[in-house]
View 1 (cartoon, rainbow, N blue to C red):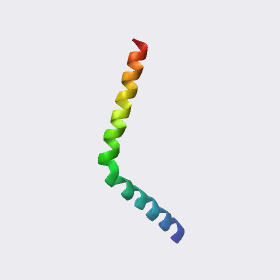
View 2: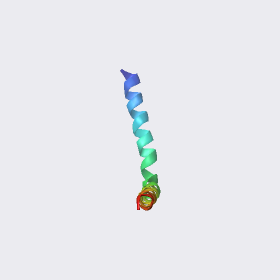
View 3: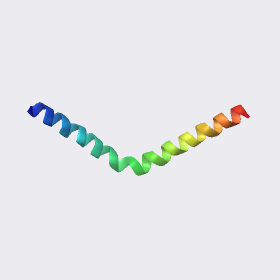
View 4: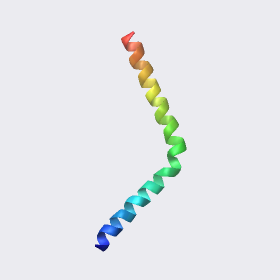
Length: 45
């Protein structure tokens, strides 16, 4: 059972490592999605 506890702790550490990068990652992802939507709209027009 101790192995299961260690696995959950490792998963939580990964999430906590990603959270501080969210202010950088989210605007970049949004810009990429907007670019793709504009590209699709221009292609269909």
